[in-house]
Image 1 (spheres, rainbow, N blue to C red):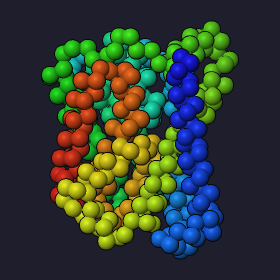
Image 2 (image 1 turned 45 degrees about the vertical axis):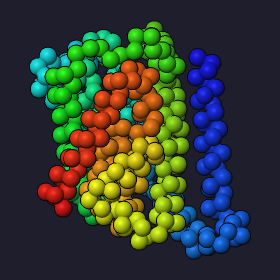
Image 3 (image 1 turned 135 degrees about the vertical axis):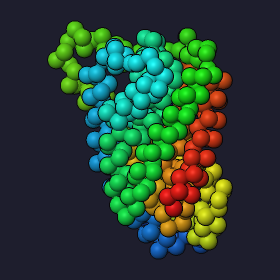
Length: 340
């Protein structure tokens, strides 16, 4: 437990130092006047783009963590498991319905899913919930609509492709994965705290509101640092990478999709904020590659991979990752051909 705390502290200090340094430089162009490749106009453009992305995404981040915290504290695992159907098709529809009704981001879903699996929820239903839930919920729908006000077809394409990819992967797992992929000995600080708080709330219900606010504050910081980092990277790419090179990559039939997959994986943005980052690339990247970014990121990124590896065996995480890459890539190309 102590080692996990030290690791989290080190990560937080790294993010704070890195982000603080870049923000100070962005707000004070005179600090880098000695660098000939960076001009005052570029830094002003970088600062404006960075701040605009943050301000647009902030309300949805705040709303998302509050709803996620409410779900974590007030909705029990047994309550969801009681209504889980046995039929695979109905089970996948049930998982998609959970994603639509319960707006929990990918960060909060994995600990919840671990508990559901331990209590007997089928693996394929849990995986569909992990993949689809962070994308199709009302908060993400609203955020995507606001980010792509002039291109509403992106909103419905994102939701539709997420449901399609989740369904296909769910059926594949139902058909071919028979062994239990859970790590039997896994114990994470987050899960222990969640279990303890849940037990404590049963005996002391007056603490539920304070527990919800504490959970929301913790999740807000976790998601906020990735949003800031992602916004910095997006603004830097837009400002300092030559537009001609971005256009060459962004309009490629294959290169644009894999570039956006890699960017989404590294940025590890929350699904309530990634649409605002994606919308900043509208003028340089194809709509299909932006769709890839919006669907792939919430399903598989760096922080999600680490969390998945703490719950599932490495072989299963690798298989799931390959399925996500293949299905999202092929699905995005298909949607791009039909819609755009």
